[in-house]
Image (cartoon, rainbow, N blue to C red; front, side):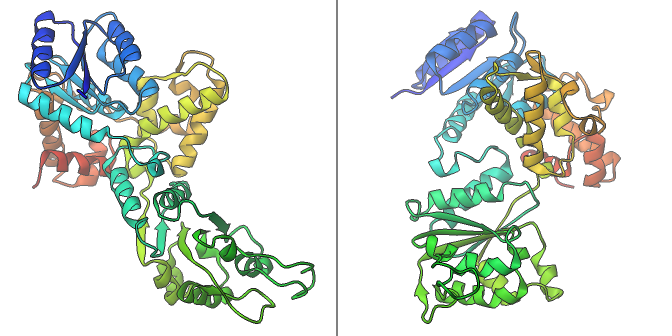
Length: 439
């Protein structure tokens, strides 16, 4: 089956040439001569890749991009422009454009980018559907999930609160051969110390006061499936030897039982605490840590993958608008910028709460910075230096020059250069790697 490509371009001659080039290379192509017409074709035809000019009337390429991110977030969109500055390109990429090309269009480069977009657009396994974000960091996490799910080795998930550790744990379960077995979660921080042993290992009737019947613990409940020990750093030190034995021997002994019971489980654990520091302070057993962390997966903070923020914001906006039975809202460019410049100490959970409130309180068609909490609006957005704007170079060259200039002005100190550009250090590192810029 031929891949379906939609081209939106107001220059008739260029539109005809691009259609001919793509058709000759085996693609099925439809065209539109403005953004409004293009959105109509997109809705009816369901293309696999969209290529759109940036400067069009009455609806421009940025509006086409925003429409796509809200309604078809999985469809890659490529921007064409002869007029855009580096700022426009950066905003487009942040909102979710797959890539951009400057006019005159290099046909070979366009074909290469479309091929890359089609590869990227292949449907992900069902196990990864809940993981929102296409940053370099998130793509690596997705690859690791599929790899770690292929073995019964224990996986330790580390990261700040709100980074999505439980979602990753459930994704590993879905991707594993145990997906038809149970997924049992135990929050070690939420269970009273005197009940945690029974919660994990179960007990026999009459084994202690109040034990009026047999109880199956989490290990037995998770047999032939996955056991997720959340907040493992809060597990009482006196119970850790028994957990170590269960992990090593794959057997458990319920309270009051006279013989062990074998179990077949894959163990996942997570914490936002530094277990290595706790080990040095004798608050966590080193041997248990090593058994739980056969494989480690570190979840990055949201501020370290800023390119995911707009994608998550759009996803949550659509989710809550549907929940509140409201038309799907847009998000203003300035609001997106504000979200991307905030440090997000509460990570994805905090962003989700902010968007929920904004979607509920917004009484217009577009969420603006006025719908965001005051603490988020207080953080300064750093403008790009005036002398970098509107040069006649293509956008990739402008971006390289901008990065190079910022680094040279800051003595190649990446932290200071990132501040000067108004982006995070991780975003700067990504751009340096993209352009191969080294000192």
